[in-house]
Length: 312
Image (cartoon, rainbow, N blue to C red; front, side, top):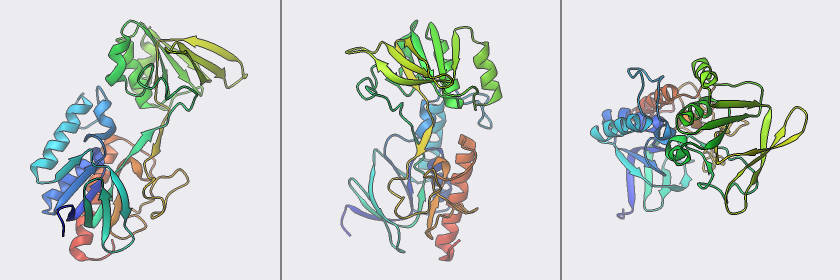
């Protein structure tokens, strides 16, 4: 076996909350465990300023929580390879192969925890102004717009939390909501509506971006009466939902109609020895706590499948 080939007991694809939790449990079980993460460990929680619904913490910075998870996985012996993008897989056979940019892994069991990615605005000039007026992380880029006017799109916890955070920096936050309601936690919505420098526009959608060399605002369309309006602002922070990162797996695994991986109660996929955990799998509730639960269950059943050499 060459230096660019490695065999492990458990290979985890994705280093977010689900993947790191799986690594903790797998490594504690004495299994040779490696996590391949295309970016930095922690996934989406890294960009969350304050997590207030994770047990044991009234409030904790997302980056701090991610660091604690990573440190615990490393402490128990898991290998964590950041910026290790998976480029190809072959998981049909008993010998499961995962190829990254520098290593070919074979594994007894695979845990897929690739999560999901933000859905873009899907308007002209989005790519042109990405990072220069159009952003997807309030805590990363919000400080650039102190005492300015910003737009926030979306209606879930991420969008509302971002708007609340930005209200402490920007002079005005305008929430552009496609529907006439939100689908976030009630406590967040109550907080949002109590902040004086936040304005909510219901039933509007961003259809175009204004600006030649500099972002200056957006053109909106009303989804009730089809009228248009110009909204001048210094930036847009987009939180229009997520789509699962399952491109690599769609030719191997059974997916639901939205592209999420289908699993059974043991988090087994349609291929024996391959498990899915976290936001990438088909389920009704996607929270950090459910991702951690998934990581636990996937690792425990991966261990069982290896030790018993039977399909769970």
